[in-house]
Image (tube, rainbow, N blue to C red):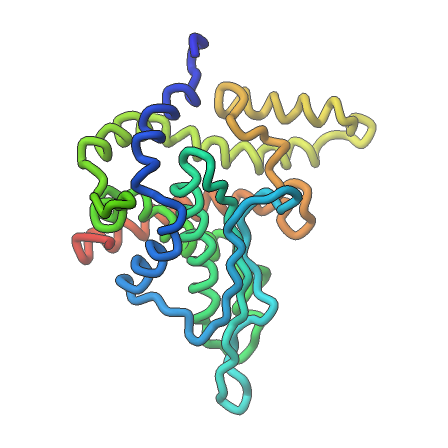
Length: 271
């Protein structure tokens, strides 16, 4: 905690513990359902399997996939989606309710997006081409962003006794976290820049030591030092279907802010 630029220390601790009672894990599904219902979001007869708790051996990232995409058949009938999505909640950990809800809103956003695509082919209702990563992530990241809004929290964040989160606590978190928000974006940018540098390495330089060193160099250059989540632990780097697309999250974050601005200017509120 005495090191300069210790962002983890500055952003964590007291605020997270103070907010924890207002995001009880057992209320996550209810908060998601009420939020989406108020926004008019439906799932068009979809079937959904939710796997929300972390456990040993479970894939270490929330995800959503579609064993059955939604589409409109040639005879005009509707084929609803079948969706599986996950979160990584540990109810015994401080902040797990908030983290679980954020992931749930994100993955449920993907599920809602692709459940409502009415096209004459199932190819349009899944995350791969012709869908772009930035386009798909804009939907989910926009809905995820609502959990951080003071207005959303005033409406939905309640402790187990039904008491709303105090505005003083909302202000405290904004003052503690907001100045460092840009580091989250910089951490996302690290991934595509690391991949670019990795694929530019000559083959004879591709050793485990050099790859680890390269990851450290990229993080130091872009974020000023190691991030709380080591760059090489990002699962997208190792998955063939997810490699070389992380820049889509950065583009989506730009689109999320544009979407939020559009609706705030049009309606004056989001939730």
